[in-house]
Structure formats: C-alpha cells, structure tokens
Length: 422
Image 1 (cartoon, rainbow, N blue to C red):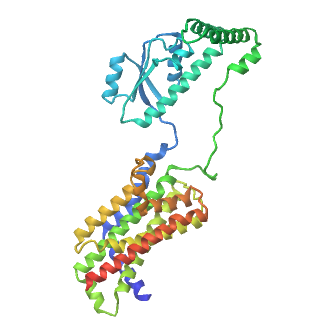
Image 2 (image 1 turned 90 degrees about the vertical axis):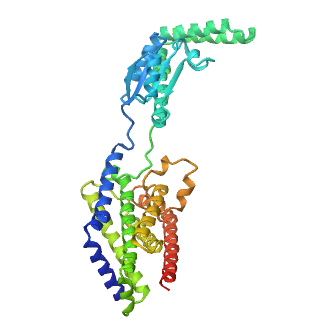
Image 3 (image 1 turned 135 degrees about the vertical axis):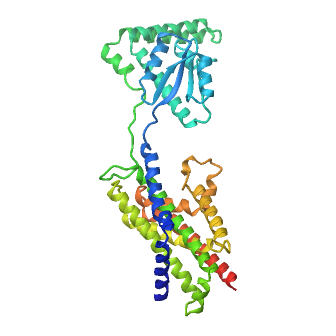
C-alpha cells in the first residue's frame, strides 16, 4: 500500500506541475458550472418576450376583447400586421408565430368551437416548437377569459342565447322534435339569465373556469432552490471526465517516454503502478469535487438534500470513472491516439448521458442509448442526493450500475494493458 501511495503522490505532483492540466481539471468545471448556471437561471420560470403578430380580420367587439387579453400577458410581445406581412415575418424567423382571427371569429360560441371552418389560424415557426406549444395554451386561456367576460354580462349572454336559438331554427340537420328540445332549453336558459338575482348570477358565471392548486414535489429547503443545483452534477461530471482523460494520457506518456519501464525494473509490480494511477485520479477528483462544492455552498448558497447519499453517489461515480480511465489508456499506443480516442469516447458518453443536452430534450428514439452511458447514471445519482430526494433504496440502482461499469472497464483495461506489455 505504501508503494501505491508514493506513486499516487508522484502522479499528483506531475499533474500540478502542468498549468494546462490545472485549468482543465479544476478551472473548466468551475466555468462550466457558472456558465450553465447562468443559462438555466430562469429555469422553471415562464417564457417571456415571445414575439407574435395578430391579424384581426374579424374586427368585432369580441376579437378586440380577445386581443386585449393576449396583450395583458407578460410572456407575449404582440404586434399587429396584415396576413401576408405576418406570415412573411414568421418565415424569416423574425417572430415566433402569426395568429389570424378570421371573419366570424366573434359570431358566437359555435363559430369558435364547432364550426366546420376554424375561425382562428396559427402560423408558427417550426424551429420554435416549445414556444409554439406555450403560445397555444395562452391563446386558449385568452379565449376562455374573453368568453367569461362576455358571459358575465347579462345583455351579452342573452344576445349569445339569441344566436344559438337562431342557429337551431336555421339548422337543416335537426328534426322537429330535436329542434323543439333545443328551443325549449334556450328559452329556459334565457329566462334564468334574465330573472336570476345578481349574487347567484355572479357566482354561476364569473370567476375562473379552471380552479387548481400547485403541488410541490421537491423537498422544502431553508433556502431557495438555485439553478446551480441543477447544473452542479453536470459540472462535477465534466471535472471527473477531464481528470479521467488527463490520467489516461499520462499512463501512455509514461509508457512512450520509458518511465513505465523504469518503474517496472524496480521492486514495483504492474498492480502497484496501476493502483497508484487510480489512487491519484481518485484523489484529484475528490479535490475537484470539494473545491466545486465549497464554491457552490459559500458563493451560491446551494442547498444539499442528503450529505450521506451525496458521498455515496460521489464514491460510486469516482470508482466508475477510475475504471474507465484504465480502459481509455489502452485505446492507443501514443498520446495523440489515446487523447483523440479518449475524448471522442468521453464526448459521446456526455452527449448521450445528458452532460451536454438534458435528457428531457432528446428524441424518444435516442433515449434508450443513454442507458449505456455512465454519465447518465452519475448525474442521476448526484441529482438524487442533491435535490431529487432519493431514498437509499432508490440510490441503489444508479450506484450499482456505476460500480458494474467501472469494474468491467477496469478489468478490461488491465487485461489489455497486460497484453500490450507482453
């Protein structure tokens, strides 16, 4: 064990003697956390400043009320335009969507919901699907609010009932019995609206059409949940990945420069050398994690769900990537080949595992491939300890997968290295 420790100390000194290594191992993860923390600082907030153009071809009292509801939304930035101009702006990417209120948009309830020809058209930018989906929700909300205003006015509601009554009279699809049923219903409805007292009328026709409360699935913390809680696991993984690549290349460097052979001449076995490399990589990763955690805790006041589970997640993740380091160092016989192959493998693992693009934004057909990436399981384990409130049982799945990947990679790397040394 003493030999392994001395070899690890030697590797740490070599690492710290190179300023470039210090930046990529310590500085880059910190910059990553700051950058992505700033990018996701508005995570969970409603989108704002979605530019849309309104084309009002109806020019009715209801369409004006509808547009006013949209203009009151902070998430939207509305301009008025003609049909051709609005669609051209969408095509050029100047606005997210064009909303066309066609003639007849305000001609009653049926014209908006049951007409064979829809009276509202949306021309949305296909590259901005998320904003387009959010916009459709705001359009529906404004429509219900405008209808609510219209129905909360007795005169307006009775006028709407008259429209429905006339629609029944002019309909050719209803037999006399059905038409009589609808006419009697609208007559009774009209009588109700005319004679009901103000208290019951306001109670029945005013207020929100959809009442709900929000349930918070996250644990209550003393401080607010910051965006750095979400990006912190990614920053840790990038630090570990950088350290993994650095130490993998260092093994090849020692082999090409003869250091490896000189160590083998002495009373030091291959197991001691690999153990020293693994221990040095493990210690360096621990230093990176401690530095980032202290920074996140003191500067950004980042709360931590469970310290015990956090330590467990870190331990399993580090053992996994120490094993991968042993495998990566066997991907070539020169520093350039191992550096290129190693970083290519690391980038692929990061892409599929959520280190670059969150898994929520990946296509469904691509998600099954993320299961083979240790980056995914490392991030999941860290998130489970930091803000997902995982129990010890729930932590077992990502931790065991990490240990299995690390063990397999370590054994494969040692086997390949022994064969190369023969």
